[in-house]
Length: 395
Image 1 (tube, rainbow, N blue to C red):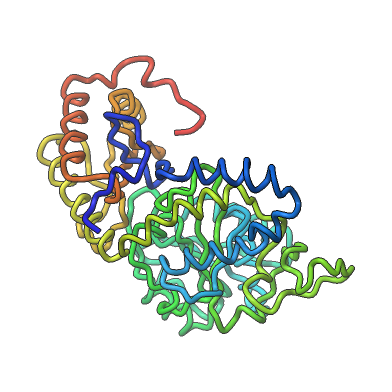
Image 2 (cartoon, rainbow, N blue to C red):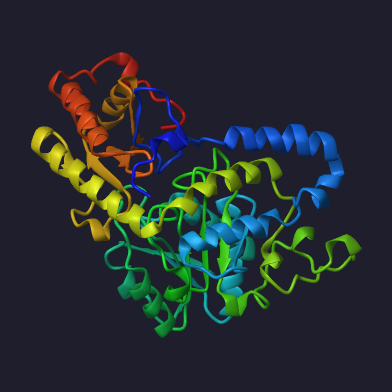
C-alpha cells in the first residue's frame, strides 16, 4: 500500500493531526460497525448475541489481530480491561515466578501509571517488595540477581527514546529476572518482534496508533510456553476454565483466556476490530520506514526554522519511536496556539511539545505546513495570550 491513505480516516477538513500517539483518529467504517453492533446485533439478538454474533470469542479473535502487529503467535494475546489492569496482571504473574526476589526495576522515563500500579501492588502485598528506578540510559546496568521483574515501556512517552528490547531482555534473563514490556507507544508504530525478544509478558493499549477509540481495550501478551501455567491472580469468571459451569472455586483456562477477567466491552471491541482492518493493507515495515522519514523531516524543519525549540528526542530515527518532542519554555501555551490553528499535537509537563507521526494519514506536506504554522506562532509570540495559558484538565 502506498502511504498515506488519508481516505481511510475521518479527520476534520484542514486539520493536521499530529496526536495519534495519544488518540488515533476514527477510521472510516468504524461508526457503521458500532452502529451495526448496537442496532442489529444487540437490538435484535439481545443476550443471544454472545453466541450468534461471536461476542464471547471476541477478546481472543481481536487479540490474534493485534498479535500479528507485535510479532506474536496466534493464541498468545487477549484483549480486555485497561492497560493499568494488564500491567497489574503481568506484574503479579512475574513476581510469582520469582518468589525469592523482592525488587521491581523500572526507569524514570516509564509512564507514571505503570509506576503507580507497581507501588500499589507493593503496598497490597506488604511483603518487603521495593520499586527501584534508574535513568533510561543506565537501567540495564541495574539489572542484577536481586531483581524479580524488569518493567519498562518500549518508547519513552515524553522524548520518544526507544529502548533496545532484545538487549535488555537478554540482560534480564541472564540475571534470572522476568521481563515485561509496555508497548503503549509501540503497537501500530514500530516493527515489533515481541516473541523473538523472548520476554515473558507484554501489555499495551489500542487507542493510540491502532485507532481503537477513546477507552479502547488493552491487550496482554504471554509467551506461548507460559500461557497454560501463568497465574492470572485477577481471577475473574471469564478467565475460568468453564465459566458457565459457575463453580465456586476458580480453575484457570488452559490457554491465553486465563488472562481474561470480566465481561468484555463488546461495543468498544467492535470498533477496534473494524479499525484493525486497515492493517490488512500494509506492513509494519512500510509504516515504520515512513514514520522515521517524517520524523527526520520534522526535526530538520523545526531546527532550521524554529530555533527557539530544543530537540528532546533522539536524532537517530532507529532509536526513536514514531514521535518527536521539543522543549520550549512556553510549551503549553504554544501548543494551545497550534491547536487553535488546526495543528494538533500535545503537551507533556514540564515543558514538552510532543508530535506524533502516523504515516497512514500524515505526509511530508503536512509536516511542512505544521512547521509553517509553528514558526508563525513563535515568531509573532501568538502563544502569549491569556486564553492559551489557561490549563485544561487534559493536556
